[in-house]
Structures are given as structure tokens and as C-alpha cells.
Image (cartoon, rainbow, N blue to C red):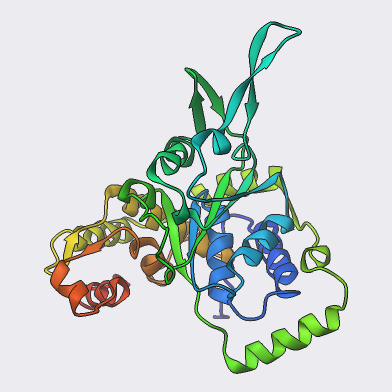
Length: 325
């Protein structure tokens, strides 16, 4: 019998073409950082928000801007500072003398892809303005509800080193991020390639080189397609067991919430689709578990004192489990 070639039951050609186009556009500027780019695209397709953490200068903000540029949708940027007020994010009622009434002037959060730079610089009052928007895709101002236009995504950056003048993000807000991406330094070879690339660009700016590869309506359509991805019962049981393990682990003070289970399921569906499959495999789940969980668990004080990281504990949990095949 001849070997049968796998044929997906769902046509994922348009999705794969879109993902490849976005990656190619970003690679015109960004050297390396493939994991960050892959997870941001997965977050976009899974209808999730992404938190990007890294030291200054590793292209966190630039990558977020390029992803937004590669999608032909509304884009806005908010620079969070200690004196930023909720009205600076949401908007404010403005008096219209002609109508003798107040009109709501929408703030920069009312867009499709919103880049929140240095999100941990704003105080809790301003952070709270994002809670309803990130979870329910709507904002309530002066008793009126305003629904965000689809697709809607928050890309936030923060610096883990410079802690003076910053505010730790509330757990409730962290839980609303699908992924937390840790951005490392590039390798020496990647840094050399980057220098050559920017040298050859001359007077052309980075964003000028990137062209839209995906329409806003296509993102909405692809998200609906991804929700229909096939995931077996045994994999759902594995996700539930994995999350439950974080709540009973000796190194963890606070385990992951049920929102984490949904995040792993949705993100693994997106990863499977990006691989050209209409079904989820254990590898899809394992590839996104660290990014989904690292910001959702709190280590016990003694483990923090020992310098153990969330990623190390997550790795221990996975190694102690039977992965379904």
C-alpha cells in the first residue's frame, strides 16, 4: 500500500499563507527572535493579548509595531507613565456648545491593535482601566458601554531590570494576558546580521519596509476557523491535569486559574493551525505552556529566595507527567 499523504479536513491554506507573509515581512527588519514573532502571531490568531518582557533595546516595541503594520487594521500606541490617568487611556466626555451636551471623545485604546509601552510604569488606577477592555472587549464610561471593534489585541511591553518608578501588575491583569514572552539577547552572529541589515537600509525607516499582509476582516475569519480545530478528549484531560498540578505543587504559592486552561487550549489550536494541521498534538500544547503559565503562577517565598524561576518549576511539572500519545 502506498503511503497516504496527510490531508487536513479543514482548508488551512489561507491561514498558512497569511502567517508566512507576516513572518516574511517582519524578517525584513527583525533578525532572530523567531520565538517572539511566532508567539505574537499565535496570540493574534487565538484572540489573546501578549505581554513582552525584556531589557531595553531587544526590539520589543519595534516587533510589536511591525506586527501591527503587517496587519491592515487600526493601530495606536500608549506610552504608560506614572502620571497617566484612566481618561488618557479610555477617553473623556467633551462639552459640545452647539448641541449643549457632552460627547464622548474616545481615547487611544479604541483601536484594533494597541501597543502599551512600559505597561508597569502606570499606577493601579490606570491599570484598572484595562481590565474590562482586555477581558470583555468593551469599556464602560459614565454608565455607557462602548464595544471594541474586532479584531482587538493589546501588545504590552515591560522592562524587568529597571524597577524604580514602576508598579507590579496586579495578578488579575496578568491573568488576562494569553502569553508572557521573555525576549533574550541576540547571538553574536544575529547581532552582526542586524548591523549589516540596518546599515544597508540607509535612510529608509524600518516601518516603511513592512507592507500589510493581512486585512482586519481576515483576522476575524481566521480566528473563527481556529476555534473549530480538533482537540482530543485525552489532550483536554492532560491540560486540566497540568493546571491542577500547579495548584498542588510544593514550590508554588498560587497556582494557575481556569483561564489558564482555556488559554492553553486556544493557543495550542492556533499553533496547530500555524503548522498546517487541523488537529492539536501534545507538542503543540508543550510548546506554549511556559509562555501561558510563567506569569500566572506565584512561587513560594523560599523558592524565590533560592533564585528558582517559574520556567524551571513549569519544566519540573511537565517532566513529572505522562504526556498522552
